[in-house]
Image (cartoon, rainbow, N blue to C red; front, side, top):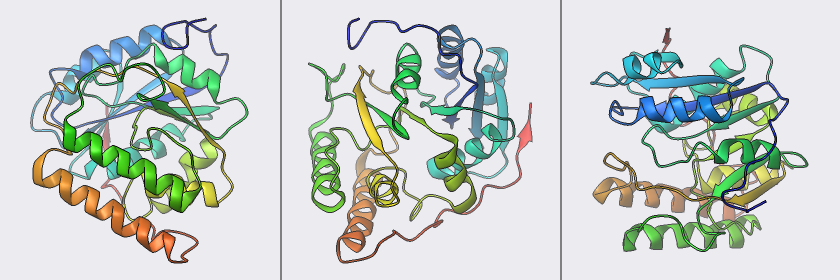
Length: 257
């Protein structure tokens, strides 16, 4: 089987796919339909993070269960709400992908398959011959810095610790749903925190597409986000066994459709 494009046999597991989305009406319908095609038995949950467009409606048309947040919760808050919703029913694994079309649906069953023997699987754009799209220079430098921090502070030899394409066991989803993300961050510091707690983390190669919307990590916002990651990882490096938890507010009660 080709490591990037080969298909795996159907996964006989109860799975939920969490897709956080804000103002992604252009892409989210195709994302949901792709996920449904690849994992027809999975429950697909789109967390509409107080979108100002018809993101929720387009996701519902495609067949997703839509969780509507009345107040903007951010990426971490939307994921946390999605995990809570996913765990309302018994599941064997939780997958997550972005709603902007960056992640490929055929990688979902590959991630689920790779979860055997570990607790969290990242889809890495840097394990294969090409990420699949051109990554801007500053963004690539930030990713390299996150790799360095994961390795030097956390002892994690990961190539893509910022990847949002993941499969995780319900135990991790429950931990985050209950306690929040460490310092409200979903990337490097979270992975260090989980590794220190004894969870097993691995990667598989994937291809990705350029985001069809404006990246949350563009410009000044991206620089500020990287500064937050660096500050929290510095705290982990100087002797803290866990990063501060739940800096993001608990998501407001959501509406379901």
